[in-house]
Amino acid sequence: MAEKFDHLEEHLEKFVENIRQLGIIVSDFQPSSQAGLNQKLNFIVTGLQDIDKCRQQLHDITVPLEVFEYIDQGRNPQLYTKECLERALAKNEQVKGKIDTMKVRRYILK
Image (cartoon, rainbow, N blue to C red; front, top):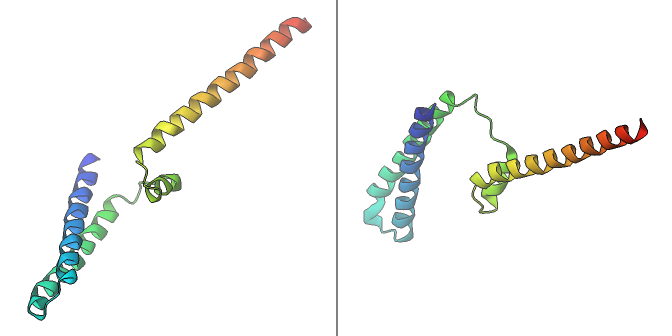
């Protein structure tokens, strides 16, 4: 399973690097750099095709929308898991308190 993600990560890293290089070429564009620009655009198209091929291997993976919200907010998506566990623990303690209260009431009513 990790191999699938490693493969996707590799393609994404190459794609990001090509986008960064494209930005450099475009920011200081000279007519003489047209060939390099065309080549970089072709690399980007190829990179998108490679990423799309990885999609087929990962079709059964679902990511909660909240994870994307974390990313959009500039937060670490790994914090999502931590906060979910903290919420589950808090809810578990709350429910345990209710159960304990019901046990006490039941004992008192006997």
